[in-house]
Length: 279
Image (tube, rainbow, N blue to C red; front, top):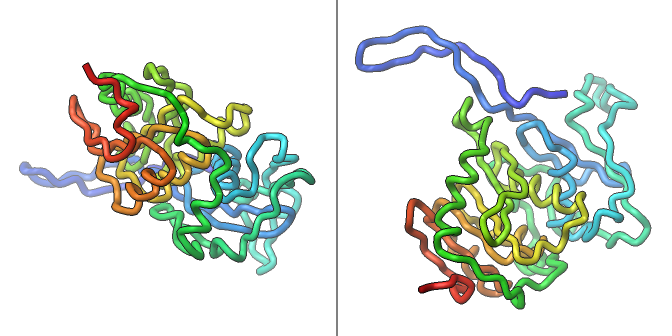
């Protein structure tokens, strides 16, 4: 199994001079996703929770909407030699077989074969094709949350970012109940991967749609993170940093409560503020 972090030598500078030291780095390796023997994507990710990542990715792509449609998931350990003759790491390739009742994905219409750890939406054919992937409506979700719960989410997420403590280079995503109880947290070099891992965990646990749940992310709120929340049926998304204009537009359309700049006892609620219970 690939490592989640690595050690390297550094020259550490400070006001008193310089000294040689050792530092921990967040691991970043490619993960190839194959469905029915066909490569559909390669994403740069932090190894770990790979099946959750793949399940969340397939949900956001509209390829599955329930755990029963994931007939089989496995690492590619049968043949370590790739077509170019080089040895490959079997834990960097996940093969998926879908059930007969899974939706027919149109991979060629939606995504190129490579996504980076910074942006998973690159290669989409259009915004409309992304919006169409949502399996459940969140607009009618009656959940309400107290401001104090909203304020607490970043700290509760940060408390569980153990890899961030050692590397300082990982994003976090967490799934919470309406009272702030944590259900699952994941870390990754990519924001979208961290969210896929959390959503994929819920999919594989048979918890979808995630009605009444809250999703917290450690960075900014991009269009794709809103899309992933809507695809999983999550009505509230809270981000430590700013949302993009397109993220706000999609959240308004989908009925997702989107909060940004959630820091300390402050937050900006951009869409569906009616879900925040005020005194």
